[in-house]
Amino acid sequence: MKKKIALIFGVTGQDGAYLSKFLLKKKYKVYGVKRRSSIINTQRIDDIYIDINSKSNFILCYGDLTDSSSILSLIKKIKPSEIYNLAAQSHVKVSFEVPEYSADVNGLGALRILEAIKNLNFEKKIRFYQAGTSEMFGRTKERFQNEKTPFYPASPYGVSKSFAHWITINYREAYGIFACNGILFNHESPIRGETFVTKKIIQGLMKIKMNKQKKLYLGNLYAKRDWGHAKDYVEAMWKMLQQKNPDDYVIATGKTLTIKEFVNKAAKKIGFKLKWVGKGINEKAINIENNMPIIECHKRYLRPVEVDYLKGNTQKAKKKLNWSPKISIDDLIDEMIQHEL
Picture 1: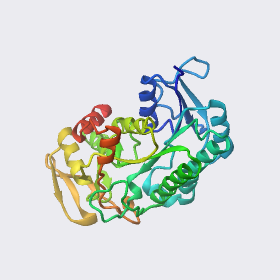
Picture 2: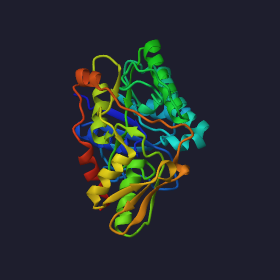
Picture 3: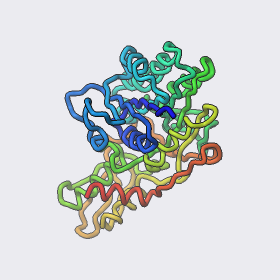
Picture 4: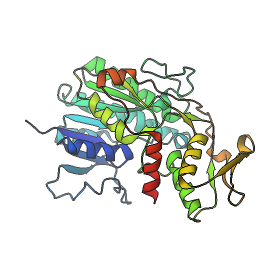
């Protein structure tokens, strides 16, 4: 049987690293695409990357979603059986500061991959996965969000991902490409980027515990999110591309916590006893042991438009993909704490 070949855009990110390792266990040959940079940022995949001359099943190559020619060249040369587009400017707050770049990478980047598949006449040879996000639902009023919930994005990031979602559907219907959208709710891990709130909370609390940091600053404490583990979610990505027909799926846990509840869980595990005082932007957490404030809110970390509530309905994924999350929020937090230790 011919070995399957996967091409992963965004391989150096959290999801790219977990997906690469998952596919290698499935005996794939994996090509990971990273942007050229003067900084070595391969720490998440250093355990599977050997070197350019090795006969490894994991090969690192350069490319950029803003460069059509590099995308076309890679797909033409590698001839993958599956393409996973995980590359993005994925920070919601940052997308307000670099909206044009976010739109170019997140929206047009997906289009460039689909165009390359079409122009190379690989419509019947390649299966394509597009990484969507719950931020596309944004300010929706629906209590549970599923595949039929209308999008109401509240950031350039959410808007750009909505374009990528619909252009994927459009190319599936217009050209017969096996193309799937995974609408993934928040998924975290020990290797999450340091500017994302779960990692920031765990890392900040650990540094305060070790007297390496005095305070942790946060934004909206009452935003509710549906948090899962990235390791579970990459399996769902793969399962989508193994189906008989392409389709779109919500991937989530169906459970929510506020930022404040996440903080309380993590703080208790790390050994803090907190007392919350104040309201609104002046709310803060006091360390009961020494009566010192260790968590405060700051307007710098508020978004121009807040998304207050996201919660996914995964009935379709459970039924069609036989997928459900295995790792609980408590186990996720434990794993993230152990990683920091």
